Amino acid sequence: MFAHLPTALLLLLCTTSASTLSLHTPRDSQASADYAKDALFKSTILNVTNTYRKQHNATSLKWNDTLADFAKDWSEKCNFEHSGGPNGENLSSGYPNASQSIIAWGHERVDYDFKKGEFTHETGHFSQLVWKATKTVGCGRTECDGQDKGKAPGWFVVCEYYPPGNVIGSFVENVQAKVPRDEQPDGPSDPDVPEQEPDAKECPQGGDCSSGVRMGVSSLAVAVWAAVWWL
Ligand SMILES: *[C@@H]1O[C@H](CO)[C@@H](O)[C@H](O)[C@H]1NC(C)=O
Ligand SMILES: *[C@@H]1O[C@H](CO)[C@@H](O)[C@H](O)[C@H]1NC(C)=O
Ligand SMILES: *[C@@H]1O[C@H](CO)[C@@H](O)[C@H](O)[C@H]1NC(C)=O
Ligand SMILES: *[C@@H]1O[C@H](CO)[C@@H](O)[C@H](O)[C@H]1NC(C)=O
Ligand SMILES: *[C@@H]1O[C@H](CO)[C@@H](O)[C@H](O)[C@H]1NC(C)=O
Image (tube, rainbow, N blue to C red):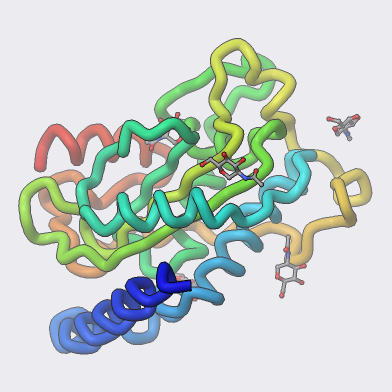
């Protein structure tokens, strides 16, 4: 019960700092609604994630509070690198809203080779997102200032997956090509496809565009590595 108290406080702090910063980054106030509110963040993550999963014949993920707590703790450190924890984990930073953060991962499917069924750094977020054997997800997010070296730019989103995906040797059976609407599990996805391109053209929320954090979508994983090296 008391575990919820720090969450509420953090939310308050985030809201305060977002409005303070909005003088310099005017897009914040309109862009961060699904970052700022816990319930909206959770439903957005589940909605976009499960839309992709349906399309790739994977059953919907349920929210896992244990994973969400872990993800939140890690996001608060604002280090744009993996936690080294036991779960599947995807990171994103600097996207204008939570749905764009997930779409950035889902969009990697344009580069995924479903016949080969292999891990690549360019498609590792997507394959985890739609991994059939994964059943639960929990995510956290923190607005990091993005200015210090090694820090995540803008809103830092961390998602944990259990059981973890991207298990070498199991890609073909776990990452399936798109199936027709009428063959999607538990009814067709609606809206059909979150096909908007992630907002990759601007430097989102004050991240430093000159040092590699302005990520090309299909090379997001590369950008993660690049950011870790360069920052
Ligand atoms: C996503 O949200 C829309 C609009 O609220 C809803 O119709 C749809 O069923 C949701 N999709 C999933 C996969 O939850
Ligand atoms: C979807 O997956 C299930 C089980 O993984 C499989 O039995 C079914 O044939 C698949 N559907 C399509 C359209 O590939
Ligand atoms: C939630 O995730 C944890 C791993 O952190 C796992 O042990 C637990 O079984 C998961 N809960 C469900 C309902 O799958
Ligand atoms: C995304 O998550 C998967 C599963 O944990 C991981 O293998 C992959 O390295 C992650 N990619 C990035 C760049 O975070
Ligand atoms: C998220 O941001 C993108 C790009 O700015 C915008 O097109 C989209 O409508 C936003 N979605 C939500 C749910 O706010």
